Amino acid sequence: MKKHLLAIAVTALAAGSAFAQATDTLAKIKASGSVTLGVRESSGLSYTLGNGKYVGFHTEMGEIVLHDVQKQLGLAKLDIKYQPVTSQNRIPLVTNGTVDLECGSTTNSAARQKDVAFAVTTYVEEVRMVVKANSGITSIKDLNGKTVATTTGTTSVQTLRKHERAGGIDFKEVMGKDHADSFLMLETGRAEAFVMDGSILAANISKSKAPADYKIVGEVLNVEPIACMLRKDDPAFKKAVDDSIKRQIKDGSLAKLYDKWFMQPVPPTNVKIGLPMSDATKEAWANPNDKPMEDYAKK
Image 1 (cartoon, rainbow, N blue to C red):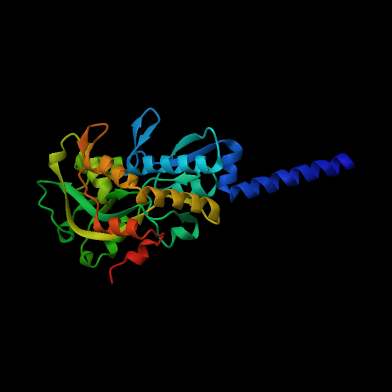
Image 2: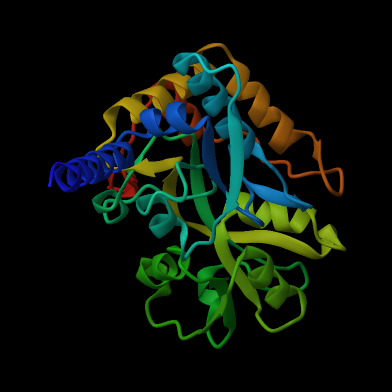
């Protein structure tokens, strides 16, 4: 009987420990000596070079954050595991504990804040569209009767449909499984425009076979704060992540990282993306916050 009770007590203790670690990422990292970073395969802020190698502004910033967490926990070694995520599965993989910190290209929105938490904003995105340079498309009004590509699980086509200048415009919508697939639709003529975050558009143009054949045009459809994503109700881990980002802003290392990934030649093609830092991003760095995109809505 005593053995039976002891077994129940041990099981309960283990379950309690597992539950506690689910909402205490620092304890989970310290106990395991490893952490999982959520990354993207074809985003402007995070992408793959193949063979399990992930790079980009947000990827490298996330790695620095995790090295700061390692120092905070006094770990001699920290094994960073990389988990590619998509627009569709990124939130479930954070909430179910598969990914500890997601640093891809995720917009901080009020709806998403119901399921996950966000670090302070590190990039303020402008949603635009890319077209073939000879298409004659320069504005939303030119999309009437056209086919428009975007990526499954993103906010961009909803943004386009809600835009006041899209009133009365009839366009066909096609969905790529990821950003590379959406750009391929434009490249192969299956779509006449690709609507997405400006950094993602610029990155896909820079990696294309003929970058001069494409241009980003039209109105800014939306302004969206991009931030690293983590589990809700874990204030200690959020503070550790935020403190690292604020430190990187304050000592100038984040600005150097931005220059490296947006203003200098980047792999694999060694072409410059060429996106100077926007005033909105500068403002977000000057006053770090985790406000959702609804707070950025034009008055």
